[in-house]
Image (cartoon, rainbow, N blue to C red; front, side, top):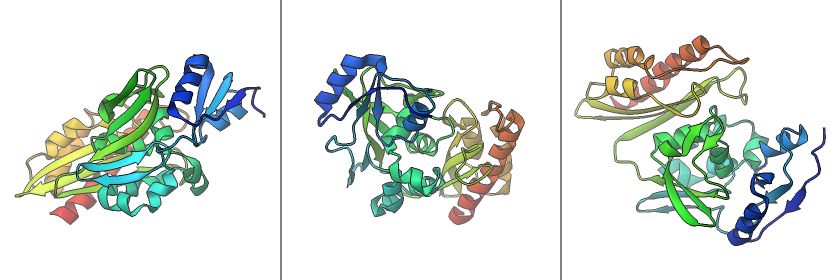
Length: 286
């Protein structure tokens, strides 16, 4: 199929972008990597009056580090995250997750900001951002603001972005010493949407465990497993604490069912991932 007719605009500045968003409102769609928008256009699931291509906007495609943490521009390609030594050093969870995003061709075009703004419940980067306490920077006609990742994702394809706002950058605070990070997901085939995934962090100090567990594919957005975290907290990392976390996990999950997998399947896979990812981290940090 071919897209319905639309006007194409390629602004050279944020101010010009905001002018276009004001002009077209809900009839204007932002084009960054296009890995979700272009298929929707071709299938006529999206029929905007205007497509606004932001790929030439300056200063949105860099990765930089500061004493406070790591900043990643919204137009950074996922493939660039995969190759970046700064990401591997300062955000190893992101580096571990990115190879699970689609296929190589998708990562070559897909952007960080696009993945966050789309807010697909099965996407890897939103879960990582919640696990890392990231701050998502957005801008619009009224100015700039920062939104905690935990507050940014509101539901299926729903975010805290206001009308006329775009994601400009994501900021990852420097993690305290002693944390280890791991990621894994389960899908029918590599590159398919995840049936379940887990972004996890674990720190063991003086024999006591602290954990961060954020699941994807098992809710309407990233799911922070606070009951399972509490079951691990303050206990030695090992089989007993992991069993307690597994018992608590059911209280954290209310997975949906669809043509790809039932709620029972997704719940089972979440348990498999908890044992796999946290078990690996516990072995390393014990």
